[in-house]
Image (cartoon, rainbow, N blue to C red):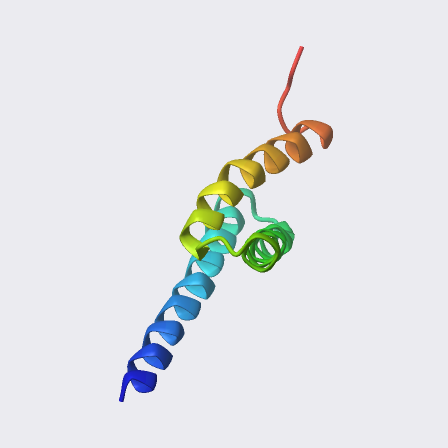
Length: 89
């Protein structure tokens, strides 16, 4: 019976991740009129980073997410500055 609850929780978490991805893509398309697939790339990179931290250092997934979020924020900001999205003088 506990496997049922674990499968249900995992399905809800994966579904919410897909939902957030879809909301982000819908928001960007609604504002700019351009479909931007970079969201999927960054989410895949962040998930792989969480998995790598979990596998290599046996960190709790929540702790690895707390490490991954600031790192991916910096990577996204660096990519945006590199692509001249922000005007930096």
